[in-house]
Length: 395
Image (cartoon, rainbow, N blue to C red; front, side):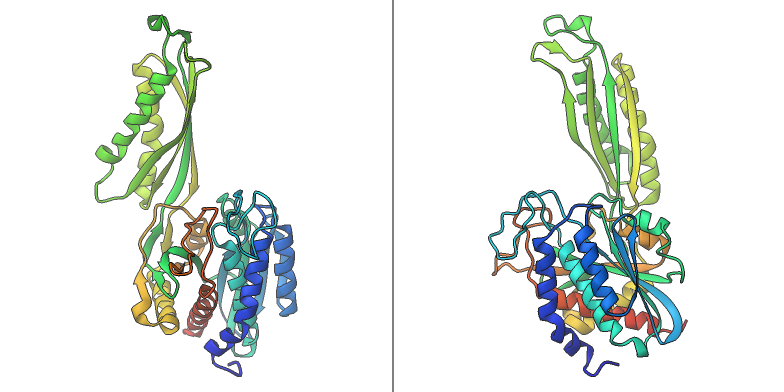
């Protein structure tokens, strides 16, 4: 064990956690462009005498800490990328990159995981097993986790369990949200092109109005959730884009629309992947048009393992007290941590970061997003305790 209890070790590095988070906040980088972030992360991990691999899935970094004795392997994950948002916060650490901002908290995630690595590296002689620190690119593009896994991050040695967190503005700082089972939804998307026949607006009988067809299809899609999906299952079908026409007095011969499909259940996901394209094509055909539909699977649902969730819940209770550990509310938002959780049992949890009194209330992806930095040591200590609890269990 370290010279001081874990909570004191965390307190000792808290000022460094804040400095790291603010540095990353000032220097945000978009997905697969995290060159400076990855460089700093790799330097910090090498300074801890960890095995370090860079360029994983383009800009990802993996650090490996091998304990003094053999045991199981646990992976801890943090995402590093920012968003194409112009920051509106008037703070000393505001973004220095125009049009790019850490508006979701990945700067905090990176700082937290570096802090966890620092503490666990100091406990190397007491650890039985291996800890992998995965700093992932491009979560906002939901494109970073899968290629990291394809690059072998879950192997050599094989990962037995994984943990991760998200700072969470829906919860006040000092509260941790944990949930077994589905936590975040799958995220798929579709794109449809409706082809009709153009005509003058004054002669609608001579054309096939692609705009009208597209609008009918958009409305009809809502019947899939209301009338075909089990009402006890959650599902969302949202059309976020619709483009048609070239002038106010010309019937459009072509229209395009695109949307997203979210659900927690794998069977509902498959059902909608078949019914969305079929319904769009059927509506078009009934109205004398044709439709081409591309449906792409994105990320699966983020599903927590019950045993791993119990470990996190116990660790969180030690950090903030059982009365401040709540049942996390599932969200239809998506997160590619789901790929890691498919590859190994694990738990992804929410660490409250909102502070109403300090004005830290901006939601995720908002230009005024900011966090109460008290969440940083809370996140570090919870991940450290969960990791040690898992590795301390009999293999």
